[in-house]
Image 1 (cartoon, rainbow, N blue to C red):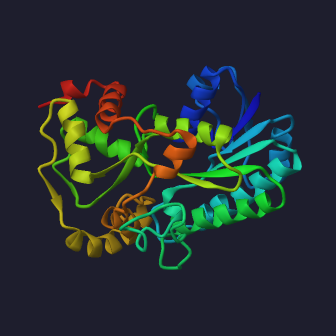
Image 2: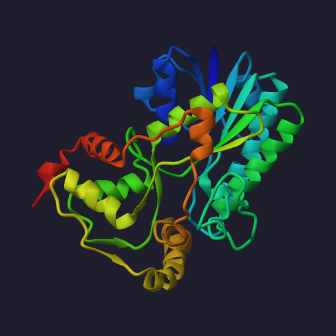
Length: 326
């Protein structure tokens, strides 16, 4: 079998490529960036923009399955580049796969494609999508990207969609936003966090869910890939304890932080940082109860324990977090 992975240089992409290679799948990768040398061995890489349908069609020749992971994650309220990549890119990749007669297509979307504010008490695959202009651009772009893929499904593409929740865990050379905070917590350098929480899922479980969706997912269906609902404070404290630290002692009130986030976004834009924006804070405030029963029932999906992920993550940092204790 020959599989193509777009966004292979990213967090989920690297883990997916590694797992596919472990299963002796012939892997071809597509990314606007070069692959990390540690993940490039035995892989045929095409450096291309996912909005370039002609380049994609060339990369998809002979492919049995395409895993579309490429996306731009942003926490700014507005980001034209994210819209172009997440919507135009999804459209181009799906069309290219259909033109090349790819047998199976998996589109990796996000829980953010759903309107988290309207679905905070219970969110499943039938919940409303994020289409309001009041929603952050990333959320709206992931919903619109799904809509583009569904147009190609209607034209005959055999595709499924997966919607992971907040992804963290090893292996991550980035590190990702969540992993970055947990790495600091493991070093004892996070005195407090923002209140609220979210459903966080191990990247390795996401990869298992993606592969399961390719194998047994029903055409045109969406599957929420969940982990464990936990507060930001508890997550940081667990990471700190795993490295021998006490961790943050309290969480800032969301009522205090949300107004400050508006100012933080304006300041952050001047420095190219989206670390403290209204979107980053409102996600923790919304903290939806995400229902992963459909993936469990139809894909056999079962996330590992939160403690296992945190222990593996702290161990993977590779900088001896325990030795950083002061």
